[in-house]
Image (cartoon, rainbow, N blue to C red; front, side):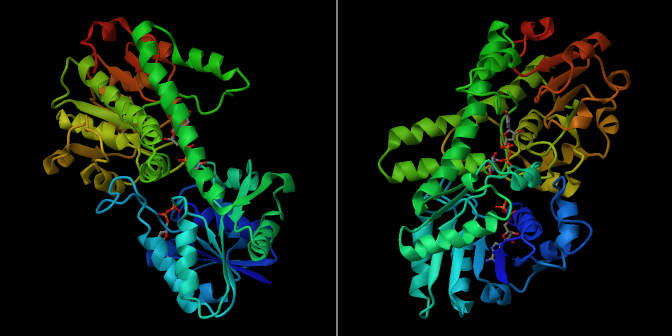
Length: 480
Ligand code: UDX
Ligand code: ADP
């Protein structure tokens, strides 16, 4: 029986390994992590991450050929294939701070693999890493190998949160990069056989190591670029009276462009897009390509602009001040169907409103109060551009309440900001909400989820991203 071990039981490692275990009953899969609480959660009824369909997959295989453990060394030692799916956050200090990936966790995982291994292993890069990381890892492994043969592969994960299980069941492609040596090709073949249990052969792409690493960064940069492009157009739509949904629909009908990832929003979030672009920017700068670096930086700048534009719109509409006003925040996660808040635009929007002394009442169906308070009390990390949003003061966090119901959040509020596209926000009883709010009552829809016309008929003043403005909003001072 082939044995797989995955180091890192996070958003990537957990779901990916659960699906491998489900699709490959002949393979034993162990997911290991240094975090005891995470592993305990994976072994309980309350999994550490919310992901539609995940519970079912885990329940089917846990204890059979899927195991979650903190005994990292034993499982690594016993495995034929070791996936490394540890976190690779952006460096906050030292060389490359603000852009480069922090590979501390990766390096310590590699050293540990070298330490405990007694047999040959294939080591698979699963976390997104800078191009040429595999080479560095290979050096660590071979210099500490005690005669053991390590083959390193890059197998980036393309799943998106909220649809992870679907994405893993039928991926657009699986990408495997390896060395162009006979041993490298043999390792590629071994990993290919794992995926071939359920992925059609023509969807499994093989390449060299660096192409695989770079493809992941490039794919995320292209996706984020589409969102920044449509968000840039949304600002122009508001200025001219065009409707961004109509524009995106017309643009996306061109088969060369396609309809996906053209939804204007308050900004993209998530653990990948910004981090991966910053990574790309850093690699370009290190390789003497400042023009290319600046090109990709602009994608993040537009994203920051979109968030601050939203805050300015809220404040200027509400008579240029939100001081002391209650603002309901519906949705805090970076997208629907996840409880993940990493880089969520809600953090910057909330901080911007708190900077103007608003009182916030926040509701998200999947994010805990603790998480929200932690996110809002952390200082925003400055990468290399001026921040438009005000810094957070410790006292401002006292202005934040977290509630477990949209009606409670909106009670007595002056305005509502919709920051995540949760389905339930489409079908709320907005008449009931209107009746319990201060007047004039505002809705700022950062995800274009509500039927703006219906809400206007109820009496709301509505702002939707990239849509023709209400007369009210037109009369307000121009936004920055
Ligand atoms: C992304 C990539 O899609 C995935 O392939 C990669 O493996 C990891 O990064 P993820 O961040 O989980 O996945 O979610 P995604 O669906 O890409 O959304 C990212 C952000 O973009 C979210 O904040 C989402 O709300 C926003 N978005 C997405 C838009 O604002 N408009 C769109 O049209 C699509
Ligand atoms: P991702 O979204 O990429 O999956 P996460 O932060 O959700 O990232 O998960 C990464 C996991 O890796 C965390 O649970 C962390 O505890 C774990 N981890 C980091 N370093 C090590 C290590 N050296 N050994 C085992 N687990 C590790």
